[in-house]
Image (cartoon, rainbow, N blue to C red; front, side, top):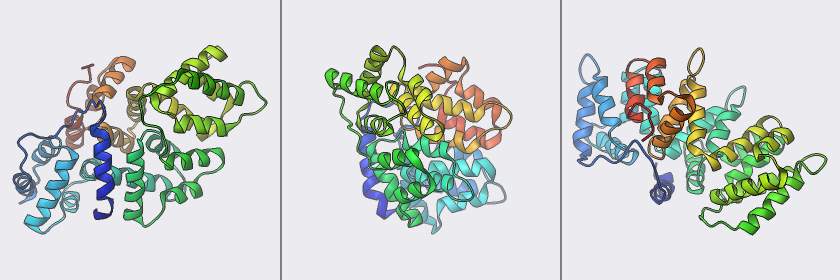
Length: 338
Protein backbone atom coordinates (compact mmCIF):
# COMPACT_ATOMS: atom_id res chain seq x y z
CA UNK A 1 0.00 0.00 0.00
CA UNK A 2 2.89 2.38 0.53
CA UNK A 3 3.55 2.60 -3.21
CA UNK A 4 0.04 3.88 -3.94
CA UNK A 5 -0.46 6.03 -0.84
CA UNK A 6 0.47 9.29 -2.58
CA UNK A 7 -1.97 8.67 -5.41
CA UNK A 8 -4.72 7.65 -3.00
CA UNK A 9 -4.27 11.03 -1.29
CA UNK A 10 -4.53 12.79 -4.66
CA UNK A 11 -7.61 10.74 -5.46
CA UNK A 12 -9.28 11.76 -2.19
CA UNK A 13 -8.43 15.41 -2.71
CA UNK A 14 -9.89 15.34 -6.21
CA UNK A 15 -13.11 13.82 -4.95
CA UNK A 16 -13.33 16.15 -1.95
CA UNK A 17 -13.30 19.13 -4.31
CA UNK A 18 -16.36 17.89 -6.19
CA UNK A 19 -20.06 18.33 -5.54
CA UNK A 20 -20.74 14.81 -4.37
CA UNK A 21 -23.84 12.87 -3.43
CA UNK A 22 -22.44 10.00 -1.38
CA UNK A 23 -24.38 7.53 0.72
CA UNK A 24 -21.28 6.64 2.76
CA UNK A 25 -19.72 9.45 4.76
CA UNK A 26 -17.06 9.60 7.45
CA UNK A 27 -18.38 8.32 10.80
CA UNK A 28 -18.32 11.18 13.30
CA UNK A 29 -17.57 9.22 16.48
CA UNK A 30 -14.84 7.13 14.87
CA UNK A 31 -12.55 4.91 16.95
CA UNK A 32 -10.41 2.59 14.84
CA UNK A 33 -9.34 0.44 17.78
CA UNK A 34 -12.90 -0.02 19.04
CA UNK A 35 -13.99 -1.03 15.54
CA UNK A 36 -11.08 -3.45 15.18
CA UNK A 37 -12.01 -5.08 18.50
CA UNK A 38 -15.68 -5.25 17.50
CA UNK A 39 -14.83 -6.96 14.22
CA UNK A 40 -12.53 -9.43 15.96
CA UNK A 41 -15.25 -10.29 18.45
CA UNK A 42 -17.70 -10.73 15.56
CA UNK A 43 -15.42 -13.41 14.09
CA UNK A 44 -14.38 -15.02 17.39
CA UNK A 45 -15.82 -18.27 18.61
CA UNK A 46 -18.00 -20.85 16.90
CA UNK A 47 -20.02 -18.53 14.70
CA UNK A 48 -19.63 -15.25 12.88
CA UNK A 49 -21.72 -12.19 13.69
CA UNK A 50 -22.28 -11.02 10.12
CA UNK A 51 -24.72 -8.35 11.24
CA UNK A 52 -22.04 -6.63 13.32
CA UNK A 53 -19.56 -6.80 10.42
CA UNK A 54 -22.08 -5.17 8.09
CA UNK A 55 -22.98 -2.54 10.67
CA UNK A 56 -19.37 -1.45 11.14
CA UNK A 57 -18.19 -1.51 7.53
CA UNK A 58 -21.23 0.20 5.99
CA UNK A 59 -21.05 3.07 8.49
CA UNK A 60 -17.39 3.94 7.89
CA UNK A 61 -15.94 5.51 4.76
CA UNK A 62 -13.03 3.91 2.93
CA UNK A 63 -10.39 6.04 4.60
CA UNK A 64 -11.68 4.94 8.01
CA UNK A 65 -11.76 1.31 6.89
CA UNK A 66 -8.05 1.58 6.01
CA UNK A 67 -7.37 2.83 9.54
CA UNK A 68 -9.37 -0.09 10.96
CA UNK A 69 -7.32 -2.53 8.87
CA UNK A 70 -4.08 -1.02 10.13
CA UNK A 71 -5.29 -1.03 13.74
CA UNK A 72 -6.53 -4.62 13.44
CA UNK A 73 -3.12 -5.80 12.28
CA UNK A 74 -1.43 -3.83 15.08
CA UNK A 75 -3.77 -5.23 17.74
CA UNK A 76 -4.11 -8.84 16.61
CA UNK A 77 -1.21 -9.49 14.25
CA UNK A 78 -3.58 -10.56 11.47
CA UNK A 79 -4.71 -9.17 8.12
CA UNK A 80 -8.36 -8.12 8.47
CA UNK A 81 -9.30 -8.79 4.87
CA UNK A 82 -7.83 -12.29 4.92
CA UNK A 83 -9.51 -13.03 8.24
CA UNK A 84 -12.91 -11.92 6.92
CA UNK A 85 -12.45 -13.95 3.74
CA UNK A 86 -11.81 -17.07 5.85
CA UNK A 87 -15.00 -16.42 7.82
CA UNK A 88 -17.33 -15.68 4.88
CA UNK A 89 -18.27 -17.13 1.52
CA UNK A 90 -19.59 -16.29 -1.93
CA UNK A 91 -20.88 -12.86 -2.90
CA UNK A 92 -20.73 -11.64 0.69
CA UNK A 93 -17.00 -12.41 0.77
CA UNK A 94 -16.50 -10.64 -2.58
CA UNK A 95 -18.41 -7.56 -1.45
CA UNK A 96 -16.48 -7.38 1.84
CA UNK A 97 -13.18 -7.45 0.00
CA UNK A 98 -14.43 -4.68 -2.30
CA UNK A 99 -15.36 -2.34 0.56
CA UNK A 100 -12.04 -2.97 2.32
CA UNK A 101 -9.85 -2.29 -0.71
CA UNK A 102 -8.80 1.33 -1.37
CA UNK A 103 -10.75 2.45 -4.48
CA UNK A 104 -7.72 2.48 -6.84
CA UNK A 105 -6.74 -1.02 -5.72
CA UNK A 106 -10.29 -2.31 -6.21
CA UNK A 107 -10.42 -0.82 -9.72
CA UNK A 108 -6.99 -2.25 -10.54
CA UNK A 109 -8.12 -5.72 -9.46
CA UNK A 110 -11.29 -5.42 -11.53
CA UNK A 111 -9.31 -4.42 -14.60
CA UNK A 112 -6.86 -7.30 -14.14
CA UNK A 113 -9.72 -9.80 -13.78
CA UNK A 114 -11.32 -8.36 -16.93
CA UNK A 115 -8.14 -9.00 -18.94
CA UNK A 116 -6.71 -12.23 -17.57
CA UNK A 117 -7.72 -15.66 -18.77
CA UNK A 118 -9.24 -16.73 -22.06
CA UNK A 119 -11.28 -13.64 -22.89
CA UNK A 120 -11.50 -9.93 -22.22
CA UNK A 121 -14.49 -8.31 -20.49
CA UNK A 122 -14.56 -5.09 -22.47
CA UNK A 123 -17.66 -3.77 -20.70
CA UNK A 124 -15.80 -3.78 -17.36
CA UNK A 125 -12.85 -1.95 -18.90
CA UNK A 126 -15.19 0.62 -20.46
CA UNK A 127 -17.09 1.16 -17.20
CA UNK A 128 -13.92 1.92 -15.27
CA UNK A 129 -11.76 3.72 -17.81
CA UNK A 130 -14.52 5.92 -19.23
CA UNK A 131 -15.80 7.18 -15.85
CA UNK A 132 -12.77 7.88 -13.66
CA UNK A 133 -11.25 11.35 -13.22
CA UNK A 134 -7.57 11.99 -13.91
CA UNK A 135 -6.42 11.48 -10.33
CA UNK A 136 -8.30 8.18 -10.14
CA UNK A 137 -6.73 6.91 -13.35
CA UNK A 138 -3.25 7.84 -12.16
CA UNK A 139 -3.95 6.09 -8.85
CA UNK A 140 -5.28 3.01 -10.63
CA UNK A 141 -2.12 2.78 -12.76
CA UNK A 142 0.05 2.96 -9.65
CA UNK A 143 -2.08 0.41 -7.81
CA UNK A 144 -2.04 -1.91 -10.84
CA UNK A 145 1.75 -1.80 -10.96
CA UNK A 146 2.02 -2.35 -7.19
CA UNK A 147 -0.48 -5.23 -7.06
CA UNK A 148 0.52 -7.11 -10.23
CA UNK A 149 3.95 -5.78 -11.24
CA UNK A 150 2.49 -5.01 -14.64
CA UNK A 151 1.89 -1.86 -16.67
CA UNK A 152 -1.81 -1.08 -17.16
CA UNK A 153 -1.34 0.77 -20.45
CA UNK A 154 0.70 -2.09 -21.90
CA UNK A 155 -1.89 -4.66 -20.80
CA UNK A 156 -4.74 -2.66 -22.31
CA UNK A 157 -2.77 -2.39 -25.56
CA UNK A 158 -2.10 -6.12 -25.69
CA UNK A 159 -5.65 -7.19 -24.77
CA UNK A 160 -7.54 -4.90 -27.17
CA UNK A 161 -7.15 -3.86 -30.78
CA UNK A 162 -7.85 -1.23 -33.40
CA UNK A 163 -9.40 2.11 -32.56
CA UNK A 164 -10.77 0.77 -29.29
CA UNK A 165 -7.18 0.18 -28.15
CA UNK A 166 -6.27 3.77 -29.06
CA UNK A 167 -9.26 5.04 -27.06
CA UNK A 168 -8.15 3.14 -23.95
CA UNK A 169 -4.54 4.26 -24.26
CA UNK A 170 -5.74 7.86 -24.56
CA UNK A 171 -7.88 7.46 -21.45
CA UNK A 172 -4.90 5.95 -19.61
CA UNK A 173 -2.96 9.14 -20.26
CA UNK A 174 -5.36 10.96 -17.89
CA UNK A 175 -5.24 14.18 -19.88
CA UNK A 176 -8.79 15.47 -19.59
CA UNK A 177 -9.30 19.16 -18.88
CA UNK A 178 -11.05 19.20 -15.50
CA UNK A 179 -12.00 22.86 -15.34
CA UNK A 180 -15.61 24.06 -15.48
CA UNK A 181 -14.97 26.60 -18.22
CA UNK A 182 -17.13 26.54 -21.35
CA UNK A 183 -16.06 28.18 -24.61
CA UNK A 184 -19.08 28.36 -26.92
CA UNK A 185 -17.01 29.18 -30.02
CA UNK A 186 -14.67 26.26 -29.36
CA UNK A 187 -17.69 24.03 -28.74
CA UNK A 188 -19.12 24.95 -32.14
CA UNK A 189 -15.76 24.31 -33.82
CA UNK A 190 -15.44 20.90 -32.16
CA UNK A 191 -19.02 20.00 -33.05
CA UNK A 192 -18.30 20.85 -36.68
CA UNK A 193 -15.15 18.72 -36.55
CA UNK A 194 -17.15 15.79 -35.21
CA UNK A 195 -19.74 16.22 -37.95
CA UNK A 196 -17.04 16.43 -40.62
CA UNK A 197 -15.29 13.37 -39.16
CA UNK A 198 -18.43 11.26 -39.16
CA UNK A 199 -21.68 11.93 -40.94
CA UNK A 200 -20.20 14.30 -43.52
CA UNK A 201 -17.56 11.95 -44.92
CA UNK A 202 -17.10 8.46 -46.35
CA UNK A 203 -15.93 6.46 -43.35
CA UNK A 204 -15.19 7.84 -39.92
CA UNK A 205 -12.16 9.70 -38.61
CA UNK A 206 -12.05 8.07 -35.20
CA UNK A 207 -9.03 10.10 -34.12
CA UNK A 208 -11.18 13.25 -34.06
CA UNK A 209 -13.83 11.59 -31.91
CA UNK A 210 -11.08 10.21 -29.69
CA UNK A 211 -9.32 13.55 -29.18
CA UNK A 212 -12.46 15.53 -28.38
CA UNK A 213 -14.27 12.98 -26.21
CA UNK A 214 -11.19 12.16 -24.12
CA UNK A 215 -9.69 15.61 -23.53
CA UNK A 216 -12.54 18.13 -23.19
CA UNK A 217 -14.04 18.88 -19.78
CA UNK A 218 -17.57 17.66 -19.09
CA UNK A 219 -19.40 21.02 -19.26
CA UNK A 220 -17.57 21.71 -22.54
CA UNK A 221 -18.60 18.30 -23.88
CA UNK A 222 -22.23 19.02 -23.08
CA UNK A 223 -21.96 22.29 -24.99
CA UNK A 224 -20.32 20.45 -27.91
CA UNK A 225 -23.16 17.91 -27.99
CA UNK A 226 -25.75 20.71 -28.10
CA UNK A 227 -23.90 22.41 -30.95
CA UNK A 228 -23.63 19.08 -32.76
CA UNK A 229 -27.39 18.70 -32.61
CA UNK A 230 -27.77 22.18 -34.12
CA UNK A 231 -25.36 21.37 -36.96
CA UNK A 232 -26.42 17.81 -37.74
CA UNK A 233 -30.07 17.95 -36.73
CA UNK A 234 -29.45 14.75 -34.82
CA UNK A 235 -28.03 13.60 -31.50
CA UNK A 236 -24.34 12.72 -31.19
CA UNK A 237 -25.27 9.30 -29.78
CA UNK A 238 -27.19 8.43 -32.95
CA UNK A 239 -24.19 9.48 -35.03
CA UNK A 240 -21.92 7.22 -32.97
CA UNK A 241 -24.31 4.30 -33.43
CA UNK A 242 -24.35 4.91 -37.19
CA UNK A 243 -20.62 5.49 -37.60
CA UNK A 244 -18.98 3.05 -35.13
CA UNK A 245 -19.34 -0.59 -34.19
CA UNK A 246 -18.53 -2.95 -31.36
CA UNK A 247 -16.42 -1.99 -28.36
CA UNK A 248 -15.47 1.38 -29.85
CA UNK A 249 -19.13 2.32 -30.16
CA UNK A 250 -19.76 1.18 -26.58
CA UNK A 251 -16.79 3.21 -25.34
CA UNK A 252 -17.85 6.39 -27.12
CA UNK A 253 -21.45 6.02 -25.95
CA UNK A 254 -20.27 5.51 -22.35
CA UNK A 255 -18.21 8.71 -22.54
CA UNK A 256 -21.17 10.68 -23.91
CA UNK A 257 -23.69 9.34 -21.40
CA UNK A 258 -21.33 9.82 -18.46
CA UNK A 259 -20.58 13.38 -19.54
CA UNK A 260 -24.29 14.14 -19.76
CA UNK A 261 -25.88 12.02 -17.05
CA UNK A 262 -23.39 10.16 -14.83
CA UNK A 263 -26.11 9.03 -12.42
CA UNK A 264 -28.09 7.48 -15.25
CA UNK A 265 -25.01 5.74 -16.64
CA UNK A 266 -24.45 3.86 -13.38
CA UNK A 267 -28.19 3.32 -12.87
CA UNK A 268 -28.20 1.52 -16.22
CA UNK A 269 -25.19 -0.56 -15.18
CA UNK A 270 -26.93 -1.54 -11.94
CA UNK A 271 -30.16 -2.38 -13.75
CA UNK A 272 -28.29 -4.45 -16.31
CA UNK A 273 -26.69 -6.40 -13.45
CA UNK A 274 -30.05 -7.08 -11.80
CA UNK A 275 -32.48 -7.65 -14.67
CA UNK A 276 -33.44 -11.04 -16.05
CA UNK A 277 -32.56 -14.49 -14.75
CA UNK A 278 -29.53 -14.43 -12.49
CA UNK A 279 -27.57 -11.46 -11.22
CA UNK A 280 -24.25 -10.15 -12.50
CA UNK A 281 -23.04 -9.88 -8.94
CA UNK A 282 -19.52 -8.57 -9.57
CA UNK A 283 -20.93 -5.78 -11.73
CA UNK A 284 -23.52 -4.92 -9.09
CA UNK A 285 -20.88 -4.91 -6.33
CA UNK A 286 -18.60 -2.71 -8.42
CA UNK A 287 -21.28 -0.12 -9.16
CA UNK A 288 -22.57 0.15 -5.59
CA UNK A 289 -19.18 0.08 -3.87
CA UNK A 290 -17.42 2.41 -6.30
CA UNK A 291 -20.18 5.05 -6.28
CA UNK A 292 -21.12 4.86 -2.58
CA UNK A 293 -18.66 7.62 -1.64
CA UNK A 294 -19.19 9.65 -4.80
CA UNK A 295 -22.71 9.93 -6.20
CA UNK A 296 -24.82 6.92 -5.26
CA UNK A 297 -27.65 9.24 -4.18
CA UNK A 298 -27.83 10.48 -7.78
CA UNK A 299 -27.60 6.93 -9.10
CA UNK A 300 -30.51 6.00 -6.85
CA UNK A 301 -32.56 8.95 -8.08
CA UNK A 302 -31.78 8.17 -11.74
CA UNK A 303 -32.65 4.51 -11.19
CA UNK A 304 -36.03 5.41 -9.69
CA UNK A 305 -36.81 7.92 -12.44
CA UNK A 306 -35.92 5.58 -15.30
CA UNK A 307 -37.11 2.23 -13.96
CA UNK A 308 -39.94 3.35 -11.64
CA UNK A 309 -38.64 1.34 -8.71
CA UNK A 310 -36.03 1.91 -6.06
CA UNK A 311 -32.54 0.48 -6.44
CA UNK A 312 -32.75 -0.80 -2.88
CA UNK A 313 -36.09 -2.48 -3.63
CA UNK A 314 -34.60 -4.18 -6.68
CA UNK A 315 -31.59 -5.38 -4.67
CA UNK A 316 -33.88 -6.55 -1.86
CA UNK A 317 -35.85 -8.71 -4.30
CA UNK A 318 -32.87 -10.03 -6.26
CA UNK A 319 -30.20 -10.67 -3.62
CA UNK A 320 -30.21 -12.51 -0.32
CA UNK A 321 -28.66 -13.00 3.08
CA UNK A 322 -25.70 -11.07 4.44
CA UNK A 323 -24.71 -10.10 0.90
CA UNK A 324 -28.01 -8.27 0.49
CA UNK A 325 -27.63 -6.61 3.90
CA UNK A 326 -24.20 -5.29 2.97
CA UNK A 327 -25.39 -3.85 -0.35
CA UNK A 328 -28.45 -2.27 1.27
CA UNK A 329 -26.19 -0.80 3.95
CA UNK A 330 -24.18 0.91 1.23
CA UNK A 331 -27.26 2.08 -0.69
CA UNK A 332 -28.94 3.39 2.48
CA UNK A 333 -32.57 4.04 1.58
CA UNK A 334 -35.39 2.93 -0.65
CA UNK A 335 -33.96 4.45 -3.82
CA UNK A 336 -36.46 7.27 -4.13
CA UNK A 337 -35.06 10.61 -5.28
CA UNK A 338 -33.52 12.60 -2.46
